[in-house]
Amino acid sequence: MMNMHAHAQAHTPGSYEVSTYPLAVEGVRLAFGGLKALDGASFHIQPGIITGLIGPNGAGKTTMFNVISSLYRADSGSITFMGRTIERLRPHQITRLGLVRTFQIARGFPKLTVFEHLMVYGDQQPGESIRTALMGSVKARRREAELAEKALSIAARLRLSHVIDNKVTDLSGGQKKLLEIGRALMAEPRMILFDEPAAGVNPTLAEEIGDHLLSLVSDGVTVLLIEHDMALIERICQRVIVMAQGRTLAEGTFEEVRENSEVQDAYLGGRR
Ligand SMILES: Nc1ncnc2c1ncn2[C@@H]1O[C@H](COP(=O)(O)OP(=O)(O)O)[C@@H](O)[C@H]1O
Ligand SMILES: [Mg+2]
Image 1 (spheres, rainbow, N blue to C red):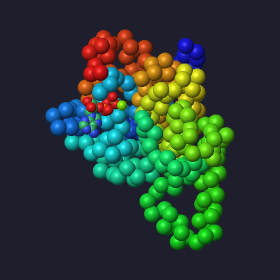
Image 2: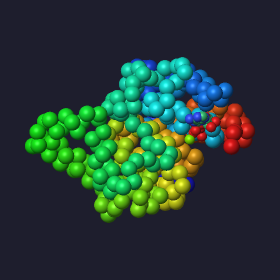
Image 3: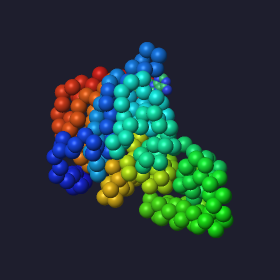
């Protein structure tokens, strides 16, 4: 493994006031019928680092992202972002606060080109197109030019410039993963929730995706990362939270949680 901990900077766990945590989750529960997908999960995310969210299949990680991004409503518990309660906001309102998420399987508009896809997500605020139209054509065109510039620079950053006019459906699996990162960046987020951004890609691209996440963090973005690739988690995460059966089981550095016997048991006995 290369560059292990090269990016880990000294910081004191627990040294932040609660109000300064970008994201705080307290006692979140959500049942699907009799299945407790989230069963009182709690954690606080520290700013300016990548925190890994790991755990066996079915632990509730994706459900946690769905609840944080308000696709699902929790049965109970609280979620705050930048000190604001967000659990009753709609998904687009959360995006507008600067909290965005990516999907395990990229979703979207298959007929669009890469460029068009990025443009759509840059202009996502509801009513935006109506408002833009009312602003008059000069302002509307200026706004569109700004968005286009943003889309081009994000594509360049993700090394997608050469496929910018290709249909999204013609991209390789890896390029779709990169585009999913690009989609999140169009919202100019303060924090991104990544759901398995490197799943199914080759090791070289997985490493590249890790580098992209590190570069986001050096731009001041806070990252919460669900990922099964433990080499990637070890390389880029300063903190790791382990979930199992809807709860947060352990938290610490990668080494700390790896040595934790409860964590080892959860992986061995995890729902598969
Ligand atoms: N929409 C849903 N309806 C019913 N059950 C769900 C739904 N979403 C997730 N689950 C169940 O909740 C549990 C947690 O799933 P998930 O959050 O996807 O786990 P993870 O992402 O950690 O693998 C699983 O048992 C899963 O089958
Ligand atoms: Mg999942």
